[in-house]
Length: 171
Image (cartoon, rainbow, N blue to C red):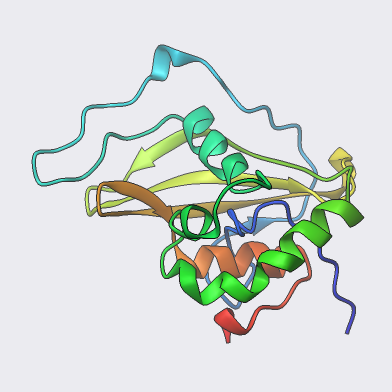
């Protein structure tokens, strides 16, 4: 089976969404998506029970992109994913994928929607070859844990699947 390791987001380490096996809605049709970086929809205040403030799409995208910084310690990278340590063996592949697919583009677009149960959803988009024709989108779930929004493990598996990549953490 072909392994396309282009996922600059295993993150975010990989990150997100379903194509079937891991469970969310993914659109394979191309569409123009722009990440809104407007602070007019700035974060809502966190709740007193420890749920962090609801981030904007731009803030979530920044978090995802930080995972790809080569100097970031693995512990911090994996801390952005639910059960992130399960993906530790994928980190070398993440950087290899980035090198092999320099034209790949991805992001998060508004709206970011709080679900009221310690989770929020946002739309993740990926253009494997950097063109709108290759764009796929999926709803991503972020889970509030330890004062941070982490990408759900299931959605990381789905993003990996969307990029034609396999991880033992997803089996």
